[in-house]
Length: 106
Image (cartoon, rainbow, N blue to C red):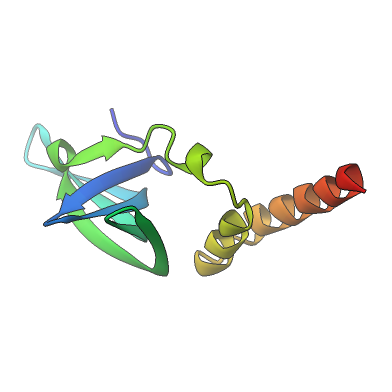
């Protein structure tokens, strides 16, 4: 069962998009339409962060991202993502962690 806020990946042609579930609407008795707010596009091996956009998909079109975020070596990408999605709480948490990283590194 897919949940709100869960990170998912969707294939759109030859490009994959990564986003979070921003809404789930029941269609008919058994089916659901999942609104995915896409924030990252994977073209080849490159990841591009873009302005968040919503799209509607069926559950069968989505797959969990797995360890996608863990593979990013540059944690500042999370800060950029928090800014793009206007998630102030997450941004503050990340900035707090970043300050701790600098303290540890010094």
